[in-house]
Length: 429
Image (cartoon, rainbow, N blue to C red; front, side):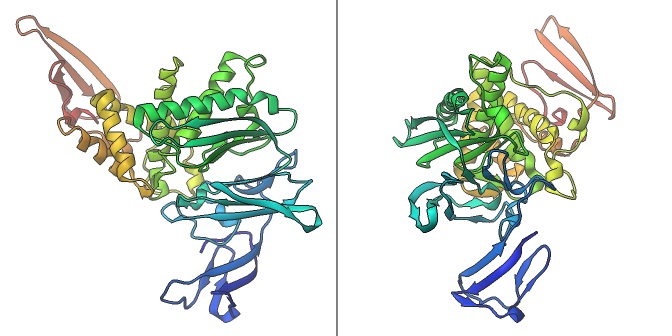
């Protein structure tokens, strides 16, 4: 099991202490030397350190005193020993204990299953997540947070009503109502557009003064930088409100494109980030907002699916978000609104609670529209830059046919297609 920066205090197998000779501990792992060839319960107790002073993952404490986690991509191993990979899913039951004056609010993923007071001025809360998730989606927040806005969303598909809550530090709680409305709009749009419903009883958003990413889509408990979530319409500009709405939408839309259907490994990061970025752009268009488009600058010239990397944290660039979204947009353009929606619904339904690659998304989209040739799109995952093209056209008055010739400057030959025949697969690359 992975584990970094931890001090192992106790380890038990089926309730019995393990002798030190039966396991090994290193700076990065814990391994049982002869584990039983049957189902067993392993219990570990460890001490961890607050992070973010030296890194961007793990457990940290904000200026206002809120403890908060960031586990994507490999931060859960800084909390406890675990199989910290995206293709390993587990059901989590979490009990959070803290001093009630210091941490009056206790949050984690899933549905609240118990809460109460303890001796010595402490209290606890128990959360159960019925949906198995990879460890990078684990989340915990505990501290002097203020409930700034609350509401609900009722699914037209399942009839389930989900409680919605937005927390912020004191002094900012009156600036998160717009974020709540953005969440409700995102939930309604994803259900109407792609038939996606939210299954938990509670969805919470938390903003803190310092959070390494702008937002994090933890299952049912998303985290944000305070400056990105707090946006009151009477004190913020239209562009700030638009950015708030799109960030809230992006993190919620991950519930299916990233959480319910997630990655087999980090090489396919664009499967969740590029796909979600494009879904966010569709939502933006529906809200009559400007959707960001691809720009040929900086890391957009990198491969979407690299051959190797030193750390998955190096992959979080505009390549997987913006370039990934543009690759998904090509599918959307070729398939049309209905064809793309049909294929994406099939992808979500087929691979719910699975860890997959971009190839499975391609297969679902292709199977839903068998009359459309998509074979030229997968190679874009390995393209390190947009191709340089020369485009020319000719019009045949007699046949009423427009012929378009596209010549790649960095490759021999050209591609031509008529406006009525569509685009041949060899030209898609």
